[in-house]
Length: 104
Image (tube, rainbow, N blue to C red; front, side, top):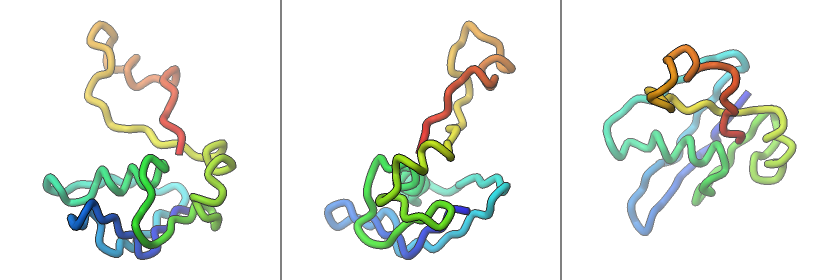
């Protein structure tokens, strides 16, 4: 399970996430949709530890993401939706298991 607890990200006065509370249960498939600037990328970047939220916390399987990042990376991954990675390869191969997902 992944849980966002009051996650806020402030970029020099621009609030990209404003107290996000979200729980994603094991086995759920989640898509983030919204207009430009809605916080979709900021949410994912926070989840994969590319950025650190200004306030709030993220838990993965009951563990704080930032305290247990390396242990969590060994168990979970994120696959970005990419229309086509290599134009010379067929779509089924582009989405094949040989691609290594971005680890959180």
